[in-house]
Image (cartoon, rainbow, N blue to C red; front, side, top):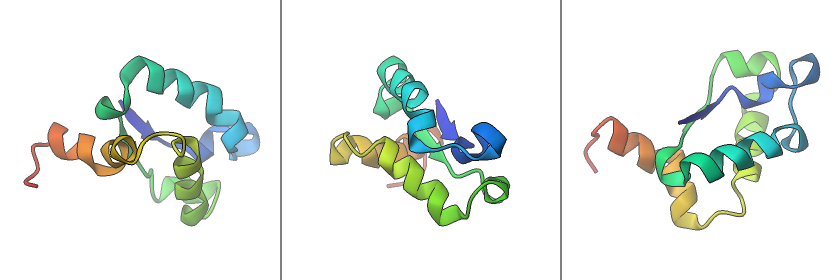
Length: 86
C-alpha cells in the first residue's frame, strides 16, 4: 500500500496531520507498516505545501511506530517490493 499524495488531499488542497490521521491509522491497521511504502508525490505535492512540509506530515503520522516500522515505510517495504539490493 502506497502512502502518497497526503498533503494534497485536504480542504482547499492542503491536508493536515489531523485531517489525515484517521485514514492513515486505518491503513496502518489494515496493511501493517511492513506492507506500506511512502511515496512523496513530488512535484505534485508542492502544489499544496513545500516538500519539507509534506515529509514532515508523513513523519508525524507514523511517529508513534517503532524505528523498524518507520524504516519499513520510508524504504524497507519499497526495497522488498521492487527487489532492490540491500
